[in-house]
Figure 1 (cartoon, helix red, strand yellow):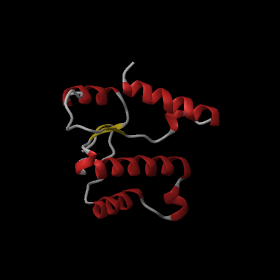
Figure 2: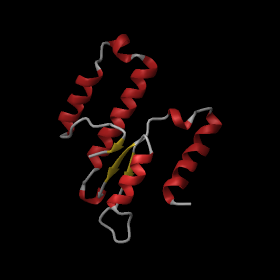
Figure 3: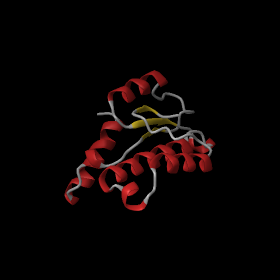
Amino acid sequence: MDHLALMVDGITLALRPYGIDPADVPLVIQFNKRDLPEIRTDAEIDALASRGKEPVFKAIAVRGVGVIETLMGLLENTWRHLEKNHRLEEKFGIETEPLLAELGRHLGVEATAQPGIGR
């Protein structure tokens, strides 16, 4: 079993005792340490990303590459999940797209949480 499958199994085991369905938790996947030798190729990561629904980000955290983009992806997924389940726009007047655009502007990235590859 590869590391990604072990991670997903670990998340599942950690959430189930609390009655939380892992499929209902906003996630992004970050493939970090892209600067090291003997890592998955971009093509392998792209193939894995195409099979899942979570946005996938490639990163070299020690250089700051992909870190903010991953954070923005997680913020987007989390906000959209909260909006879907709790109707925040209706209750508080906070519109999703302007909020995410403003967060992205402050972080210096575009709002991008689409299934597949993150930026």
